[in-house]
Amino acid sequence: MNIFKFYNENLDYLFLKTYEHLYIFIISWLLAVIIGILIGIFVSRPKRKKTGELIINIMSTTQAIPSIAVIALVFIFLGIGATPAIFALFLYSLVPIIFNTASGLLSVDKKLIEAAKGMGMTNFHILFRIEIPMSISSIFSGLRNSAVINIATTTVASAVGAGGLGELIFIGLSAFDYTMILAGALPVSLLAVIIDQILGLIEKFLTSKGIKMITEN
Image (cartoon, rainbow, N blue to C red):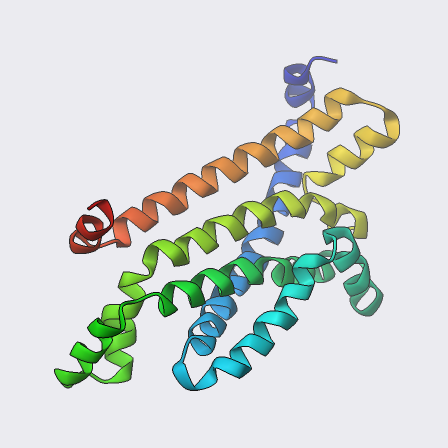
């Protein structure tokens, strides 16, 4: 069957699966962004280096385990449906955000921080007025990587009854229907590209002119 004919005949089903896919992605990724940035900030503080290394090592183990295995392990404890998929994808999205946030903050020139302290700025002001603006490129690199990983891995969520566009791919595989496999895979790829481009635009908007001049030179 022609893929465009398939889309035309199954438009409502496609919209429903796209909605499920985006719902799982948005909830799990936003949770990972909030928790991941907070952990990244925490582990980058000078007096928490050992604790930070321990947290990063623990989080790294989730990245080393195949996504389907993470979802299967979570499924054992949380059952079927969207909840285990969201929790597993949340864990899977954390590591790139933590690594890039922490490495970005740690790479800020210490002379700038000392100068800010000399001017009487508090640690809070130094973090939000110097460290985070200087690390925005590294932080967004982590956010974009985790978003693409998450939206691609969400296809596996249908294995535990969470729905999403992966359902078309799994049904297509079981029926040897290549049109159905492509009908599920193409929207996933398109969503990943669109979301990556949106995050790239947000990064440009949040990057100050001074930081752009420094990175370009």
